[in-house]
Image (cartoon, rainbow, N blue to C red; front, top):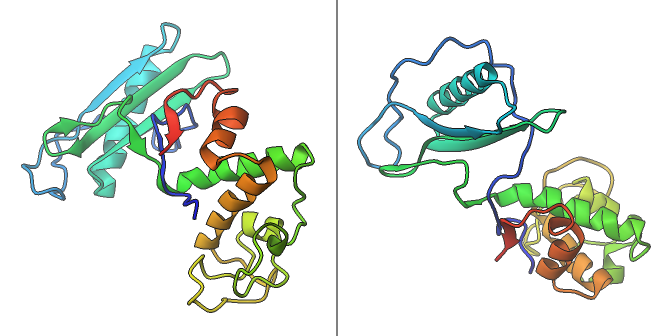
Amino acid sequence: MVRPEALLAVVPPALLAIGTLGAPALTAHPVPDLLGGRAEPVTSVSSMSRSFDPGLAARLSRALEVAVEGSGTPGAQAAVVLADGSTWTAGAGSSAVDEPMTPDLLTAIASITKVYTAALTLVLAGDGALSLDDPLDRWIPGVPHADGVTVRHLLTHTSGLASDDAALEPVCEPGACYSYSGAFSYLGQVIEKASGQDYADALRGRILSPLGLAATFYL
């Protein structure tokens, strides 16, 4: 089973939620002691391109620190790319006891892998290798409770399948409800059969390499 949780990445440039940019300058607040270590003030390690505004970079760093402190998570990474291409990246808090979170630290991105899987599925659909309205059993015969389930249903979490665990009963009929589902992982097998490639190779060749994401890979 191709799982959607195994992708590792140095977090690629993405939009940071900037609703907290007006937060006051950070004072020394302790990080919750989630890892059994000594609580320390949240600090950030950041970098920016030469053209990125230093004042904005400082505000973003403070916003990230405040977000980490307020969420109770040990650490986080963030990146912002502006329309002119100027870039800011940062890590705040800790990845482990006494190890600062840096913006270039390799991180398992868990279900964010679904974004890449969805993009790859759409690329294959655009190439004519599959259709979003293909029934799942065209590509994976014999999946329990999958009658009427299509690729589109899996992409939109409307398949009704509770997960890829055959022991779990469906939560609704295909298309009748939205339910976030681990059955999304079936798309990994669909991708392999439609592309004729291993999932990791298909992802590298069609998404990661063309976008220059050299530090993102599937185990």
